[in-house]
Amino acid sequence: MKRLWDHPPFSDLKQDWLRDADPNDPNAAYARITTVGAKKYAPIIGKDLAAELDIIFLRQQPKGQLIGAGGDIDNRLKTLFDALRMPSRGEVQQLGRAVAADEDPLHCLLQDDALIHRVNVQTDRLLKDADQHSLVAIIQVTVLVTRLTYGTITLAGD
Image (cartoon, rainbow, N blue to C red):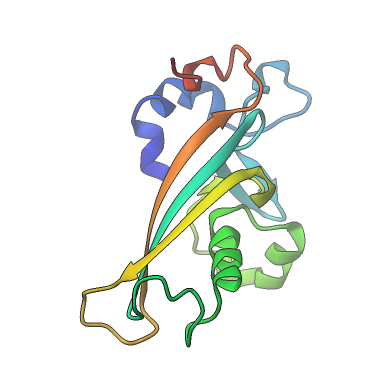
């Protein structure tokens, strides 16, 4: 996620967006870096944006088998969504020192998984020698502008 800020259109937004969110600073309206507990996070999708996810799960099971030994699809998606979002204050407290060595700020896709507006899931067979629980997820993210403003116009496209 960190490398996305080095490429357009996010490189054009980096100066205004990739900084600490300060409610007392009127120039920080689009700032993404948020402190949760003692840790800082930099989600790409936050205020005025949403995401659509197209996911391909490559697994050792036959194509289309959504429920199997590795867990059913809703549990897999919940785990994936949790991994893509900033943790809650309670989750940060529960993890404690386990996150001390993480990047600061830790870059993630979503401020909150409620910002996912659409999900499309496809499954196929993983053709790599791996154990039966191995999974490769290919995720295409479409960024949606939910409110057109000066700060989001770069992402609005045509």
